[in-house]
Length: 264
Image 1 (cartoon, rainbow, N blue to C red):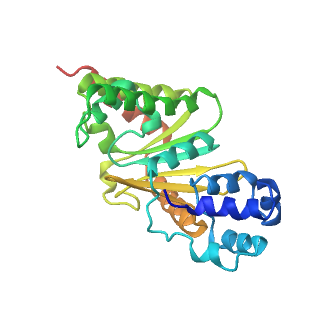
Image 2: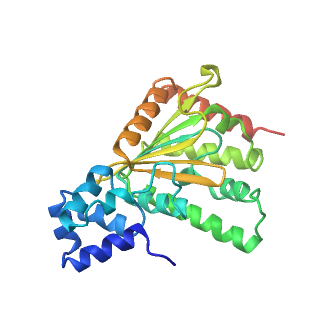
Image 3: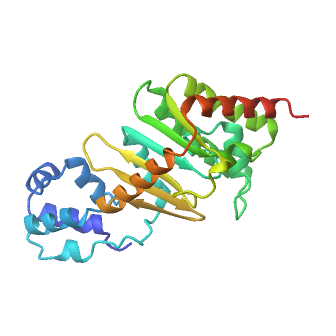
């Protein structure tokens, strides 16, 4: 396996006799940000790369070899999953399916049963367990603060059948009623809006810059360019302003769960 961007940074740091903490202090960054870059989970911003080049006396290597915005992170979801576990604030947008961190077991199993190429039952069981592991971040009563903006089609698509949907929506209702998750529904009547064409996750952290994650079919991207993240945050909040208020969203969730629950 070839040397990655993170490997090269670590090698240059160690050659300079610096710890992650020392490099972070000299480059006006956080130690955890340096650790994420070296582990291949994130890339520095252009400004950070310039400071790292200056501190490590590497000319303009780190800025020159900084991946472009359209490069997909290898193992894209694994990087996003690790960031999700560290976030203090998470804001989700889902145009089609319930976000993974909010899925029930039956709903997750139904989704994972229609992948291509198909996987065997044993492999599917592992994928379901992995997905449900993500929801453990909700066992803390406060952190992370989670908002979910759901297109109405998420509620109308009968993933796994009526019983699975009734259970899934009831789960969302419980999380929302308890205050653990804030859920808003974007009604059909709005028509087109800013972020309709992609899933989007916004994440904030205690000691590092915010990131965004977008995903499509077999492709995902962790965005940590400050300018890109700011644009995506703006688009999310503009869309959120058109969604149903919390109590109206809850009423729609309850009514939809009841409809599925009484399905013949």
